[in-house]
Image 1 (tube, helix red, strand yellow):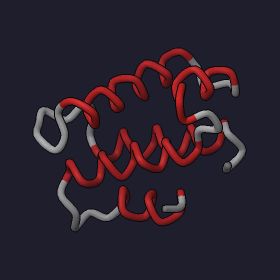
Image 2 (cartoon, rainbow, N blue to C red):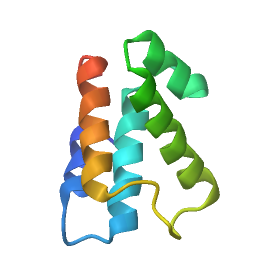
Image 3 (tube, rainbow, N blue to C red):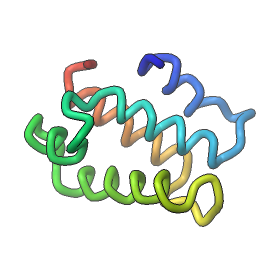
Image 4 (cartoon, rainbow, N blue to C red):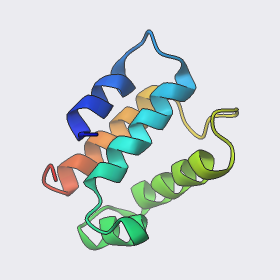
Length: 92
């Protein structure tokens, strides 16, 4: 899937909160040039330490908890994080 499609789903208030948070993570995943080491590659591109920590928390939730709660962040926070990652990566 493409970033644009995933971020649209993340913004869609008619979807469940967990679906929106997952879509935000998937949008972030699309931006990572090295999918084997997503957080590290995003950090090399200039993602700040706080956002790298949030991406790590989001990845942990996706891999170990999703779709159950508690959510690692609100859907709006997850969308904002995805948008920051997209900006740092130059829209890759």
